[in-house]
Amino acid sequence: MASHQIDKELDSLKNAVSTALDYAKQLGTDAAEMAISKQQGLSVSTRMKEVETVEFNKDGALGITVYRNGKKGSSSTSDLSPDAIKQAVKAADGIAKFTSSDPCHGLADLDLMATENPDLQLFYPEELSAEQLTELAIEAETSALAFDKKIKASDGASANAHTGIKVYGNSHGFLEGYCSSRYSLSCVSIGADENGGMQRDYDYTVARKFSDLVSPGIIGEKSAKKTVSRLGARKIPTGKLPVLLSPEIATGFIGHFVGAISGSSLYRKSSFLLDSLNTQVFPEWFSIDEQPHLLGGLASANFDAEGVLTQDRKIVSAGELQSYLLTSYSARKLSMNNTGHAGGIYNWTLSHTGQTFDELIKQMGTGLIVTELMGQGVNPVTGDYSRGAAGFYVENGVIVHPVEEVTIAGNLRDMYLNIQAVAKDRDLRSSIRTGGILLNELQIAGN
Image 1 (spheres, rainbow, N blue to C red):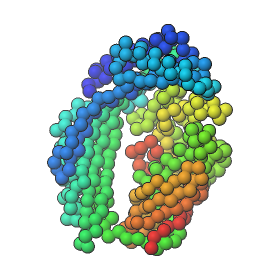
Image 2: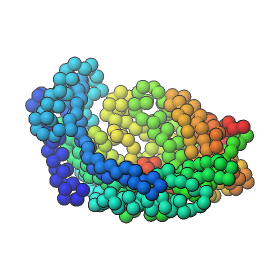
Image 3: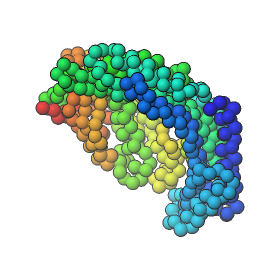
Image 4: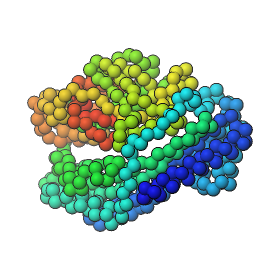
């Protein structure tokens, strides 16, 4: 979608939110908040250099929440005509009259609202056709298939281009919105060895600006190289070994920490990090910085899903937990302060210990590199952790052979405290920006 069209659409969505807020006020509600997120995009997937699917999407709905005497009612509508909006607001108000009262319901406090909305450079519209996206996907597959004779097939490539608009308003008088764009390309390769063993792996790139994507040739080559490296995988003996998490796996590992310090987990008492604020949860050298206003960041925003100003924040400093992640509701439930985390986290950057990932392999000596995890064996209440894994066995700092069908097990509290090192070559493709993470020792279940 062209830039001038997006601007026009943004104004239209703000008008829809304003209409809903005005009608909620007319109905005599105590407070109201409205949000709409509208996306438009094109996705193309190919398999073995043939087009498999072409999908165009344009969707979005106005979410409506009203409050009366501590009671909450919600509804939504994809029809943004004035009459449809009024009907939806009326429906939400009707629901609110019959729900249970909760003193923690309501808008975030007025003094927490963002008062400015500077351009964070999240929007780079690019007019791309299905033909152009198809060329990218096929180029990635072509590169993968040509990498090595052991690559027997492509399990598909996908190229995507999306733009979006988010608008939020509430009865404090807050009404703001912003536009964003996201482009991505991925490729999956299938390989086989001389014994008939088969493996698959993938690689991908994602960016706000189309020109910042890694080239299709490189993505295809990386997916093929990863696949070939996994051929001949086997189990290793049961025992305890140091474990080096690849950057892609490390982001998920820290993702468990995000869930453990989120307000909803804390007030439900379903977190292994209850009552851990200002206590040691990581090594003393370890820190996590949150930077919501990074220009062009994949997880940047001036305000959260409740209009609360986002701020640079030390989540972990010198290994100590400095902040929970609280919305207005969870903050009230816990008698704490709102931290502006309605809707998630914003560009977490982990500290590192100065080594590259390859240097951490040498430092580990003998151990297991984990590049894939399977299963959902994580208990958020106790922190117990047990998941199927694949990767590479290392001896004397050198990769010996690929590994599959093993299980790694431990407890997240202990695993976080016993992080030995973090690589400096960070993966910047998600909201958690980190390099590989070396863990002291985990139980490995193999042969």
